[in-house]
Length: 296
Ligand code: SF4
Ligand code: SF4
Image 1 (tube, helix red, strand yellow):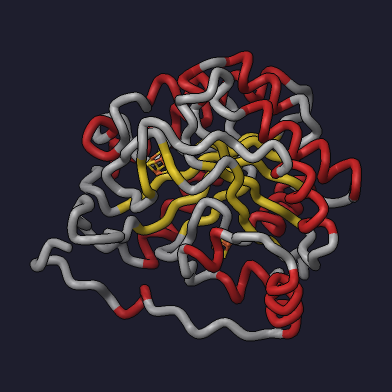
Image 2 (spheres, rainbow, N blue to C red; image 1 turned 120 degrees about the vertical axis):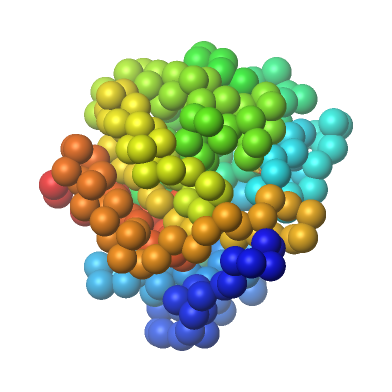
């Protein structure tokens, strides 16, 4: 962290508790599922697993392994040019575990797999189909890579039965090169989100931007307007936190009031839902956001 930028008190979070949280946690220890929620020690675990006011419990799980072919400067995931091949049993095993677990809304995410011909899209799609076959009412969001801009890979996934297609643009246009792996990019991410919307009727699309990386207000407005121009439905905005001293430093801790301002701004330009706050992450209370988006 930049020593001149001090971490403010609003980033502290209470220890998780609650009935549903405990139920989800207990059943998790019986199943062999690795949640991003626990592994990343996410501060929102109490809110997501309890399901907040609407009682829709959300959890995030990772498929396609724990080793990424890319290296973004904000992310602490392990990287390698040749990660282990995907486990062919993973879609079925994941589906079985998820449906017997007490969550209503699953966010499936993965590392980037540039080593696979379809970027892992087929594996994602198979996992979604297996979950929906076993429990049609479970709601599924896929938070994916850009599949190197391969729009066929995007279509394969959007037609697998998922409810929400999410891909994160991460930061404003000017900072893409500094923040993300050079194989990612602003235009490529926009084209993936645009195609996801067009490739399946009624598809809900979602993206996320980290704040505090040195972006200006005008640059953030530009990004939000560009996302609206391709009809992205849901936006989440959260504070960037430096995972280790080797990663990008935090340039600014954005105040909770400013996050509220961005929520209002985003909804005024037509996003169906904006979740905006210092601890908001892209899957933050995703189930509730989805339901609220559908009733709007
Ligand atoms: Fe991390 Fe995703 Fe970047 Fe891989 S592509 S380094 S998982 S942010
Ligand atoms: Fe899990 Fe995402 Fe919620 Fe964190 S924000 S607890 S990773 S679902």
